[in-house]
Image (cartoon, rainbow, N blue to C red; front, top):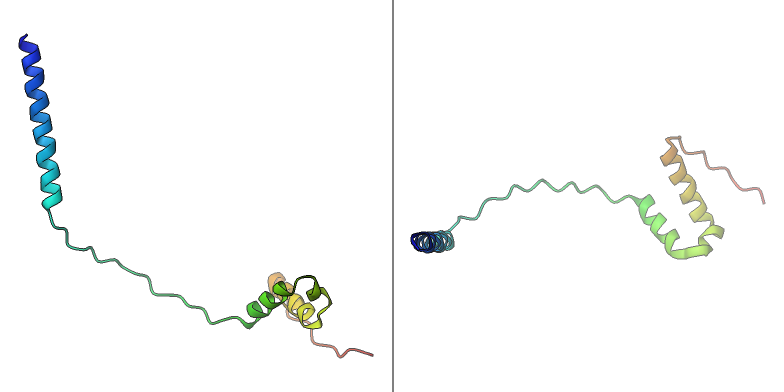
Length: 92
């Protein structure tokens, strides 16, 4: 019977400690921690990217559009690290 009483007293002490810790934590006022924000790295808008979006929105019709074909050629050259090919006049 002595062990049951000790177990109850231990449980009561544990619950009282947990309640006290919760109240102290709740009552504590934390100062807002300053957040360090990285400077925004805004790149200038890329006109090629805007033209790629336009061609993407055209769908299959872009395959027949000369401007889109030129955009894709420039994109391919950029990707492969080549100098863009000089524009050649079309022979009609």
